[in-house]
Picture 1 (cartoon, helix red, strand yellow):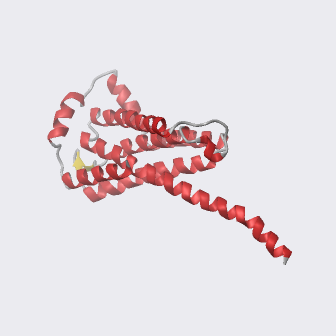
Picture 2 (cartoon, rainbow, N blue to C red):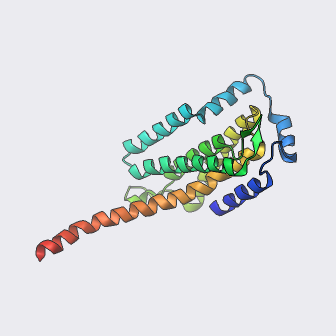
Picture 3 (cartoon, rainbow, N blue to C red):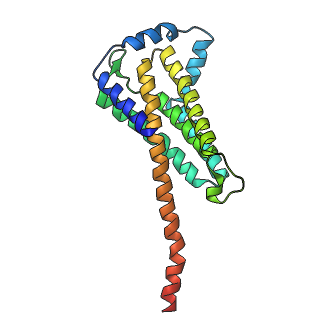
Length: 218
């Protein structure tokens, strides 16, 4: 999934590098979405706020606090690292691609869409995680069911924020697709990295008492 999403991000970035106008697909979609009136515009503004610094920090803070209350520090690290890397990747790509909208504002990929998709992905992955792996009771979800739930969460979050960005005229539809795929590419890789690092640290801590015992025996 990460490889496929990353390929889409790269191809779209090459296609729209340095562009300052919508493509054919953008124009068709914008015609039916952009410029919505009340109450839809209010909903779009509320969605957009979730991707702004204050709204984003609040959402992440609540999720991290929930992980800590549930005694899942690895989950808290995953949330912060995953969302941070997804937004960071979107920011770097904006400068590399150089696509603009509205008087030179960098637009590809959509950082708002990358953020909310990344947050939804991390929360869904944590919720569907096989609890048996960490010694918690319960069988957990199967691989197929877990994958369906995770992808559905990503699709719903990405579609909601993407619609808001296009409706408000802040991004082209292909910017939204690029932001969605950016999160899909970054989050699985981040999950693997966090798990690998945490497992190594746990193994080192487990080995320390045995090492001390052997030294004391000498």
